[in-house]
Structures are given as structure tokens and as C-alpha cells.
Amino acid sequence: MVMDGTDDRRSGVRAWLYVVAALVVAMVAVGGATRLTGSGLSITEWRPVTGALPPLSEADWAAEFAKYKDTPQYNILNQGMGLSAFKVLYGWEWGHRLLGRIIGLAFFLPLIVFWWQGRISRRLGLGLLALGVLGGLQGAIGWIMVASGLQPGMTAVAPIKLALHLTTASLILAGLVWLAAGERSGVSAPAPTRLRVTATLLPALVLVQIFLGGLVAGSHAGLVYNTWPTMDGHLVPPADTLFAIRPWIENFVDNHALVQFDHRVTAYLVVAVAILHAADAHLQGHAGATARARGVAVLVLLQVALGIATLVLGVPLWAALAHQILAMAVLTMATVHARLSRGTGRVRATAETLPLGFEGLAGRGA
Image 1 (cartoon, rainbow, N blue to C red):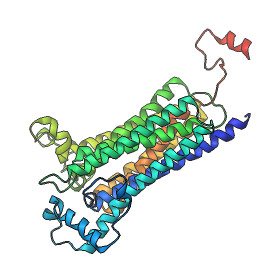
Image 2: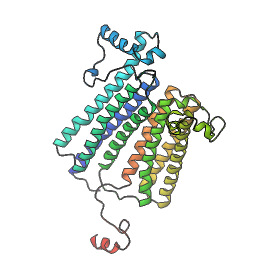
Image 3: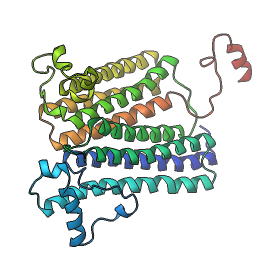
Image 4: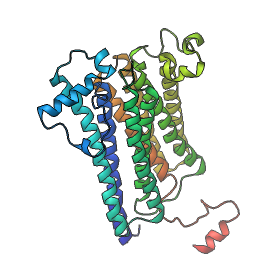
């Protein structure tokens, strides 16, 4: 493998992208804890600049607590809560928002420096700008989600908005990892077409599963049907259970049975695709793709086992958080695998990668 100065420049950019990706995973973890502790509605205003500072005096704390007392969540669920308990809720949500601000700085400040130094290619720059826009959109989605939980009669955020918030964070993570993997030094040939297609399908399926998991979390569907592999004694619940709500389309968001069933079925699909893909890579004899595909399959199986344990145990905090974090690990591994399966660097055409009939040209150009 030939190394040049470009490799050193790209390694710094790659390390930066992985650091930001790790911060995004931390953000997802803190967000999960915020949701599971019921803290997400403790801050009732969106102040992108001044909100960076927490209350600094007892008068400030009293003012924030008074705002929370006007929310439906307090009046319905937390009536009589003391100031000390409120400070715990507020701390989780404030930490979540502060981490979002830190991610913004960790992304944009190095981006400006690297761009000024000429270490960002045009293609990479466009991808990073798109992620920057998506990050700004994510902040807006977060506030829209919180605002949905402040409406009359609401004690939690709307499930569809929580699922969208989680999925957008996951998209940002996948984008960062994809771009970082593309900055890997050296040259590698792309995997055969079928392996590339399936490798690209895997992170897409994982993102769908994460969205469905967000619906389960947002609607608290994991607190019902706490058995496996059956749901209330059925492998497939009756149609009048899965589609009990009218209009029928609302069942996909509001019906606990269908929301959980969709999450289960998609998990089985992801497992099947991951295992078959790993077997296919092994049979085709592609060493790099085989190792990565096996890694994805192992993580998927661990995630399914953890998901089953979380359900059967009644969704304890530690298991729910671990399940959410492991989902990010699955997405990261699947995304890296998909990107590297496309090849890296400038690959010289060979008889193995050219279409049929061009072998002679490859031989003369070697």
C-alpha cells in the first residue's frame, strides 16, 4: 500500500468524524435516559443561546419550576413534586440540550479549520454541509417534539415525533460514519455486486427498525405483551386486535399491539438478511466483506437477544438504554460495511471488476 501526505491529512478528518459520531451516540443515550425518566418536558421553552446556562439562583429555579407546574404532565402525573425532584428532571433535559450544542461546536469549528487548510474535498464538503443542515433540522424537530407534549391533556411527547427525532439522529450518525469510512487510507476493490446491494440494504433496514423502535418507546408499547415469541398467546395477533382503531392507518402509531408487532417482524427480517448476507459473503470468498458481514450479523443477534430480554423484564431503565445504544452500534457497523463494500481509493480496473469482454483492455493497461 502506497502512503503519501494525503493519507495523513485524511486520517485527521476521519478521526474528527468518528469523534463527532461518538458524541451523537452519547446524545442518543442521554436522550433515551431523558425519555425514560420523564424529564423531556421539564424545560418548557426553546432558547438556543440563553438556554445554555442552567438556573443560577433559587429565584431562577423557582421561576423554571413555576413554568413546569403549568404543564399537563405536572398536573396529571407529578402533582405535589418538590423542587429537588424537579431539579433532577431539569438536569437530564438540560444536559441533553447542552450536549446538542457541544456537538454543533465539535462539528462546525473543525469543519471550518479543515476547509481552510484544504483538507476537505468537494464531494466530502457537500456531504458535510448536508449533515450540518440535517443537524440544524434535528434541533427544530426536537423542539417540535417537546412542544407536542406541552399541549392540553398530554403527559408525554407524540410518538411519531419522538420516532422522527430518533431516526434523524440515527441518519446523522450513519452519515458521519459513511463519510469517515470513505476517508480510509489505501485502496480496496469493491465487493461483487450482490454483496454491495445487500450491504447497502442492511443499514436502510436498521434505520427502519430504529424508527419502529422509536414508535414503541414513544407509545410505551413495550410495557404490554411482555412475552416472547408470542403476544398474548399468539404468534400473530388477530386482525381485530392489530387493527382495532378507526381509521385503520392510525393503528400503525397508536395501537400498542400493531406497533410492537411491526417492531418484532422487522427485527426478524433484519436477522434473516444479516445472516444470509454473511453466508453469501463467505460462499463468494470475499475475505473483507465476510469479516464485516459476520460482525454485523453477530451485533444484530445480540441486539435481538437484548430486545427480547428488555421486553420480558418489563423494560427496566438499564436494559432499555443498552438496547438503544446497541442499536447505534448495529447501525454504525452496517454503515461502515456498506461503505467499504463499495471500495475505497482509486481502484485500477482488472479482469475481475470489468464487464465481460473488457479483460484484454485490462491486461494491456496493467
